[in-house]
Amino acid sequence: MRVALLEGTPARCVAAGRGRLLVGTRDGALLSTDDGSSWRRADLPETDVYSVAIGAADGTLYAGTEPSRL
Image (cartoon, rainbow, N blue to C red; front, side, top):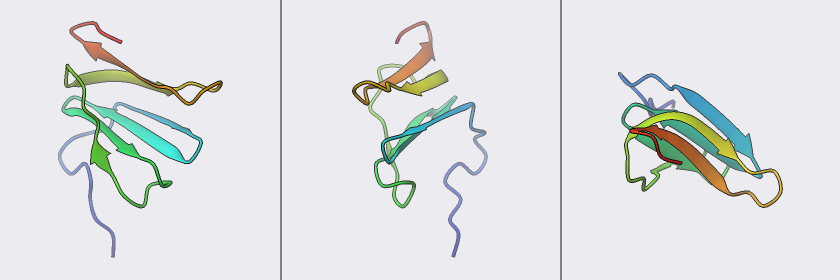
């Protein structure tokens, strides 16, 4: 059975690496640490996410938001 995670909220950006997925939306970011089997909301100071990345060197998660923050 499939479950819609972002029903009504389009994904703006996606990053993947080290078994983790990070999805940015206008309502915040979702994080999976098990290749997408489970998801949780990332705790961010701003919810309007325009870009996401996972650092290649150490796996640090990055989210660019509006108002401007990293």
